[in-house]
Structures are given as C-alpha cells and as structure tokens.
Amino acid sequence: MIRLLITGASGFIGRHVLEELSSAGYSILAPMRRPMEFPDRNLYKNVIFLEGKFYSDTLLREYENFNPDMIIHLSAIRGEGRGRWKDYYEVNVLGTKKLVEFALTSQVSRFLYCSTVGIFGTTPSRLPADPWTSANPEGYYHISKYQAEKTIIQQLRGKIPHILFRPTITYGEGDNGFIPRLVKLVRSHMFPLISRDILIHLVSIKTIREFVRKAVQKEALEQDYIVNLADKEPVYLTDLVDLIHKYFTGKPYPRILKISPFLFNLGIQLSKLLKQTSLQISLQLVSQPWYYDTSHLENLCDCTLKDSLKEVHELLKKMYPSHAAKSS
Ligand SMILES: NC(=O)c1ccc[n+]([C@@H]2O[C@H](COP(=O)([O-])OP(=O)(O)OC[C@H]3O[C@@H](n4cnc5c(N)ncnc54)[C@H](OP(=O)(O)O)[C@@H]3O)[C@@H](O)[C@H]2O)c1
Image 1 (cartoon, protein in one colour):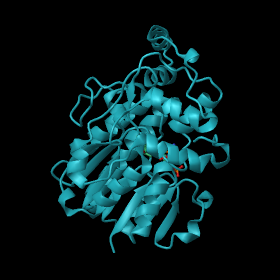
Image 2 (spheres, protein in one colour; image 1 turned 90 degrees about the vertical axis):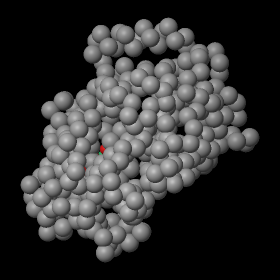
Image 3 (cartoon, protein in one colour; image 1 turned 120 degrees about the vertical axis):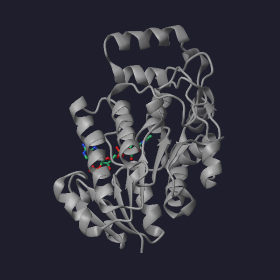
C-alpha cells in the first residue's frame, strides 16, 4: 500500500485532503499539534495521527520509521497578520526546508507542495496570471510561501519529482475564510462594494481534493509541475455579493452602498504608508481584479473545474439552511 505523509491535515484544506485520500485506501501519517482535537479520528482506520510540530526533530524521526512514498505538504501559517516574520519564517520556510531535506534523505518518489497564487501579489502583474507570471509577493505570508517554493525547486530539481500547486482563495465546508467573512459583511450591509466591476477568481475545495488525488495516482505526473488551481471562470465581485444578498433577502445588494475606486485607492495608499499590510491586502482584494489561467490544469490532470456562483449557492444552502429567502 502506498504510504503518504500529509502535513496540515488538521486544517481546512488538510481535512478534505485527508478524507479524500484515506477513503481512497492510502496508508497515511498525519502529524498535527493537537491530534486529540481532530473530529472523528477513530473513523480513520488507515491514518496514524502524530502529535507535534510537523518539522520537529522528534517527528522527523517518526517519519523515517514510517518511510513514506510521497509527501503532501499543506501546513503553513496561513494569511497575513498571524505573527511576526520570525514565526512565518520558522514554520513556512524552515519547516518546509526540513521536510525537503527529509525527502532527499529518504528518497520519496514525489513531493507535493500547496503554495498559493498570492506569490504573484494580490493583483498579478499579468491577467490572467499563468504559472510563469512573475512573482511579486507582498506581506509575510506570501513572501514566506514564495521562499518555500524556491527552496523546493532549488533543492529537489533533478532529484525528486515535485508538484507545486497554487490554489487561489478556497471555499467549501469547514472554511472560516473569505466566503464566511463576505457573508457576514454583506448580511450586515457593511461590505464596501466598489462601483466598478472587478473580476475575482476563487476555487472550490472539491477541485483541490480531486487534483491532489490525481496528482498522487497519476504516473504521468512523475515530472516537476507548477499549477494554479482555480474555478472554471472568474466571477464579477458584484455578482457574488448579489448572490449572497439574494440568498438571505431575495433582493440584490443595495446599490447605494457602492464606493468609488478613488476612495479604495486612497485607503490602499494609506495602509501602505502605515505598513498595515493585512488591511492593504483586504482592500486590494475587493477593489482590484485577480484571476488566473487554468488551461494548463485541465490539460494536466483532467480536473472538473467548478462554476463558482453555483457552488457558492450550494454552500450557502448547507451553511445557512434556515436563513434562505423564499425566492432563493
Ligand atoms: N485556504 C485558502 O484559501 C488557501 C489558499 C491558497 C493556499 N492555501 C494554502 O493551503 C494550505 C492549507 O491551508 P488551510 O486553508 O487549510 O489553512 P489552515 O486551516 O490554517 O491550516 C493550516 C495548517 O497548518 C498548520 N499550522 C498552522 N500554524 C502552524 C504553526 N505555527 N506551527 C506548525 N503548524 C502550523 C496547522 O497544523 P496543526 O495546528 O495541526 O499543527 C494547520 O493544519 C496552506 O499551505 C496555505 O498556504 C490556502
């Protein structure tokens, strides 16, 4: 049986990946800091849960005993404003480096790394950004993810096949990120909707699950790849906001609440000046376009890319079943 080491299995994406791969029958080692809090862990018969930081020397020794065939590295401090640079560097860069060193000594057959489209910057220099668009990371989170990418490429090139997949902002069950926050703001009429239409590009967790399963299974993937993971098409932010508002009220988001691009730009410049990177990125995300080329993804692994608006609507029905307006 193929043995997989999966870091970050306790996180939003990790739980989905763990469910997908354990139900496919793989033997899995899942390090996490608080395994006792993992829900329904007894149901995962082919998973060994380990307690600790994924890059600690104690756990690295445990990995040696397990002798994995592949590593799926999902752990990271995710998002801006979660600590000092020292913290991001230790977990996202040095932690990855230790795993890479382990991969080299134990000669795994494949190394999968979950990066982020954030390495292009909040608004990529080219739209749609393809995997070769130049990197321009902003903030500790994106910079640390980019440094981790570079470590993997430099150290594993020509030695161990590696796949770097870069999801855009991901939505799905169990997430507490972009969509739940957007829902909260839209429902309270606090969302600052920009007065011009911008295209944004999300990805369903279902695509990540499918991609990782195929990347583990497919022999054709025994080469080095870098892919962006996103839904079939980008969507207009206005359409997404209207969809959410209509779900709860039956009506589109009030147009009176629209804000001019000038005010957003002012906010972005001010937050840059005051070094409020987290605020700067949030303002950029809701006022500037960000979307990605996924044609390479379809060619590579034949993944079924999703329709964001349809999927978000389904998600709302699952998350807020008793709050739907009659017409939605
Ligand atoms: N969610 C998104 O929209 C999105 C988009 C693009 C890329 N990504 C990438 O996808 C991966 C998974 O993200 P996610 O959304 O699942 O994030 P998440 O829910 O925050 O989970 C992150 C995982 O990283 C581990 N981790 C966090 N801080 C740590 C620390 N200080 N020391 C050691 N381990 C730590 C946690 O493991 P333990 O607590 O169990 O140790 C947790 O399982 C990340 O690499 C992220 O960069 C996510």
